[in-house]
Structures are given as C-alpha cells and as structure tokens.
Image (cartoon, rainbow over all chains, first blue to last red; front, side, top):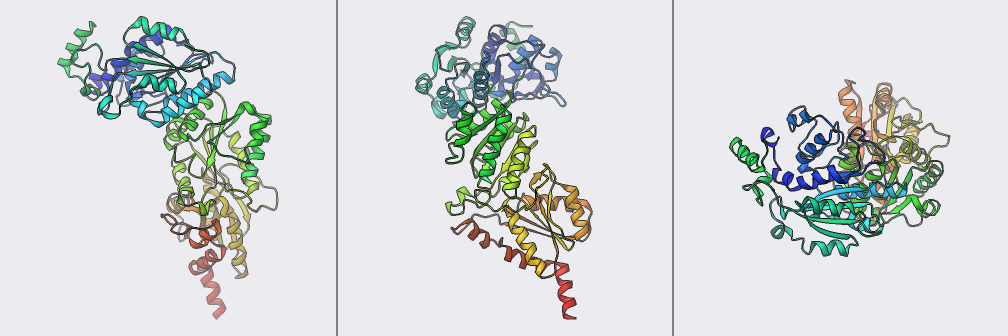
Length: 252
Length: 317
C-alpha cells in the first residue's frame, strides 16, 4: 500500500500492527455489518498517521472491501493518509493532528457511563502525543470522573517525528506519570500477542480507574532495516526494499 | 444576554434530556441553577478548554447536545483545532458559547477582548455563527442553536444590556430581523451594537435621513436576500460590529455586495481596526475610542452618504 502510494509512516504502522490485530480479532465488541451499532466498543486511532494498519485490519474484518486498500492515498480515494471517518465504515473518528484522541475518547466513555451502557472506549496514542497538553488535560479528566470504561494504549516505540523520545522530550518515568494522574497502569510487550490479549481482556484493570497500557514496541517492527529507525517515519520503500521486506515478513 | 442564555438553557434542558452544559471553570453566579437542576448533565471541565471541546465532541457523537461555555476567547481560540477537527469535521452537535464578545470585558485588557472570533468561526466548515443583538434575541438564539443539528457558535455580550426589541420577534437562524424601516440607507449590525445602530438611526432621522436597521444576528449563513434587497432599495449599506473589520460582518457583507453585480452601492464598515487596544477602559469608553459611539457613526455616515449630501445641497438652494 505505502509502496504503491509513495506515502509515509510505515514505521508507525508496523509499530501498532500487533496491537491492532489483537484488538480487532479478540478484544473489541464490534459488528462489521453494523459499524454504527449502539453497543459497539469504540476504538480511536489517535495517532492517525498509522492508519495504513487500521485500514488493513478493518478491511480484513469486512468493514469495507479489501480492494479499497489498492487506492489508499490515491486521488479520489476515501482512504486518506491519516485516519478519516468520511466514507470509511469502522473509522470511529478522524484524526491526524496529535493529542485529539484521548479527549474525544473521554467524552464517549463518559457518555457510556451516563447512559448506563457497557461499551468500552479504546484510544491508541503514540508516545509523541504524550507531549501534547491536551492529552494530559484528558488524563486529569478521565481519572477524576473514574472512567474505568476507558483504555489508553501508548505505542511506546521511543521514536517521535524528529528524534528519539529521550532526546526530544523525555517522557520517563512514563508509567509513574500515568499512575500519579490516577490511572491503572499496565506495561506490556506490544508485540507479544498473548500479553496484549490478556491485558485487554481485563478491563477495568482496577475499579473506578481508567487504564493506561504502556505497550513497549519497535518502530518498523518486523523488517530488519526499518526497525528502530526514524527514516521510515517518512520514507516509502522502493521495489527492492519492498521485496526484501516482504521476504522478511514471510508474506507473499 | 448572559442571563437570558442561562434562563433559556434551563428551560430547554427541562424538556430535552440530551442537553448538557460543560463550563471551563467559569460561570460563577450564573451557571449554578443549571448545575443544581441537572447535576448529571452539568460538568466543569476545569481550566482545560482543549479537553472540554474534544470531550464535548465525544459526548455529542454519542447523541448529546452539548453546550460548552466560557468567556471571551477561551472557548474559541484556545481550542480552535478541536473545534475544527473534532466538532466541525464530524458535524458534532456542539454549541460553543462565549460570553463577553467584543470589548465587553473592556478594562480587563486585550487578553479578554474577543475581537477576531467571528472571522475565525465563520471560516470553519459546517459552523453556524450567531451573535444576538439583545437579550430577546439571545433567548431566541439559544433555543434556535439547541434545535439546530450541528456545530454552532453563539457569541453573547455580558450582562445588563438593554432590550432593543419592543415587540415580539420572529427569530430564525440565517434570517435578519428588520428593527426599523427606512429607505434612505441601511444600517446592519451584529451582536451588541444593535442598540447603537438604533440610536444612529434616531440621530439620522433628525437630519431627515430614514435609516433601515437590520439585526444580522446570524453571520453564517448570511441572509443574502435581505441584504441585497436593502442594497437595492436604499443604495447605502453600513455595517456595525464590535469585532475587527477583517473577516466579520463587514467582510461578509462586502463579499456578497462585490459579487452581486449591484452597482453604485455606498458601503462602509464600522468596526475595530486590526490592532490591540492601546488604552484601558470600559466597553463604552473603548467603543468611543474606536469611533463606535452612536454620535461618531452618525457623523461619519453624514460625511459619506450620497443622500446626506443631496439633503445638504437642496437645503443650501
């Protein structure tokens, strides 16, 4: 998709691929035939730039035909380079500007509580988004209102747009920060399918607390020359690189 | 207008349990009634306007009608991107309410002068922009935005404004209200300068100039038909707003007139220059400083108006 489109953010898309795979195959209560089903779990990809993986997962689950993926990022397509809800069943909200997902998710989680509904709201944020003040505004709000139906997953691959998190704006101690804000914090290997499934199967993690899952991930996961590198936040693979990546990923 | 807004909102909330009010840690002395009557539908989001607005979008996308409330620029500029992306792009049923539009918080200084809000809100897709002219319009506007499906911006004055409308009004979003008849020229105001517009008309009337006064309470969508009829019938259009002359009512009217092909319409915008107030003072003082007192506006119109010139010339003969 990204090769064909000459688009970007491949490293980010690989970083969240395992998380999305578990969410959409095991965790989320969804019905691809009824994307507006009132009782569905809500999922917000706050790091909208990783949308290639989301589109793939949605197509795989049957929210829309797989051949839509061929037009990703192309003129006239519905599938933009950041998660876009218009004309795309299954995309809960449009994102792309960082720091918007957690406030919206908090509003949806609060609505669920007020209406006595038992759906959960999941928001997947990048580590870079934890720089945004709006994320911490929502962090205060969700804990204050005891939104234990809200789950934040931080894709902690430790590389943001223009450098490593440590160099740009260090988040550490990240788990302690979320704990101090009143969240139940769990740390997992974001590529270990069992760990992901287990942690997401136990929501709320603690009563009356929103859950923050810090998923330690690898940017560009699965392709040796893409892993842990900033370059693949921007670059689209050429044909040779594509072939090599596909071989490494063991796909056809 | 603030009192009218809250009284109306309480009334509406009694009949519609989808209505929520979220404040950004403001509303002391005015929001309490709503909070006490509807504790589950009232939220103080704290001093956190970005979360307030994004969260409001989340509530609205879950079926609620959500009013966000704060003063001056706080519910608008601080969270502008949340308004654009989260509210407007999703067509979320969020009503952004700013009290203290224009120079209402005069002496508090430029941080509290909301003087570009209309321009910015007007440019956002899907946004309806309303600036009622007096408490009567504020009451009607509150009901109208609650009933309207989609994002709205409601710009209110502060408190204690005079009631301009002496008779019951028929209020419809996007439809100007004619407050005074006249065929010589037209004064169009938005927001709290409606009272000034009426005063200008009275001054001009003593000079034998009969001014039509239109309250353009909805800036977007603009009532183009009423505007063009006024241009056709009176030939002179003057806009009044407590807002920068860039992007607000004057600009909106100018855009329509320029594209309408209407010939020889005399036109002038009365508003604030694109600058920060260099003096401290009350709303009334600052209005006068910027030539927005009724006397200044009337005087300026007499200098520009073709009809005024004809009257003077015929008097000299």
